[in-house]
Amino acid sequence: MKLPSAVAPLLSVEGLSVYYDQFRAVHDVTISVDAGEIVSIIGANGAGKSSLLKAIIGQVDRCDGKIMFGGTKINDKATSAIIRDGIVLVPEGRRLFPSLTVEENLLLGWKVGRRNGYTLDEVYELFPLVKGKRRQQARQLSGGQQQMVALGRALLADPRILLCDEISLGLAPTVISDLYALLPAIRDRGIGIVLVEQDISRSLAAAARFYCLLEGRVSLSGSPGEFDRETITRYYFGS
Image (cartoon, rainbow, N blue to C red):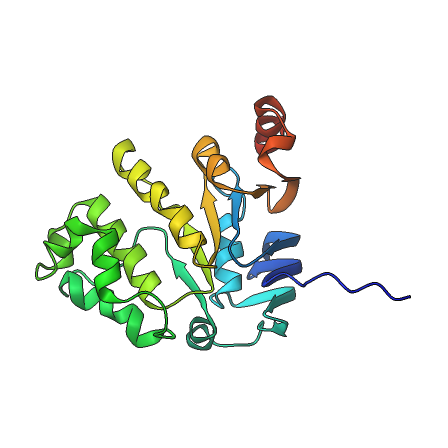
């Protein structure tokens, strides 16, 4: 009797290598993310975390290996098509349009995405501070408020997979706590979330599984509860 096959992950990266000219930033990395799952990618600065996300979203010049999304290979797709398929990046540094209003920045996500998920009103419910500043230019916001706009813009694109690149970088601890408190509700809508962070504690506390990158390679992976902090730190720094 043939046993039923396991359900394939929503996103799978198999044997991925990323190159910048002759420099190899990512080496044969394999990861997977299910719908409604939070997966953490941790590693020191320069470990290859952002390069991995850029490859998934189609923003590197050259990569080897296979990137599968919903059972379809997406290596050769344009970034715009990948976004329409349902993979959306919250980039490091937020990358808002400073001269546009908050609401104009938010609606860019709706214009380029799938348009069937979060509404503008729902985003404003998540970020009431942003709603009060919706007519202001993005340049007038604090760093934390800009990060809320960047996350709201991504949600309006109706992601199936949300890639979050260092969303806590440079923010006050209270703002970081507020952002991380929203992640379970986003996950519970069936959205897979990839958290790329240097902050080990915060990232692992939110995730069901993690991958640790060291010099472009996966040095450790599993459930956060499988390893003590000393072990994770050792694989994080390679000591």
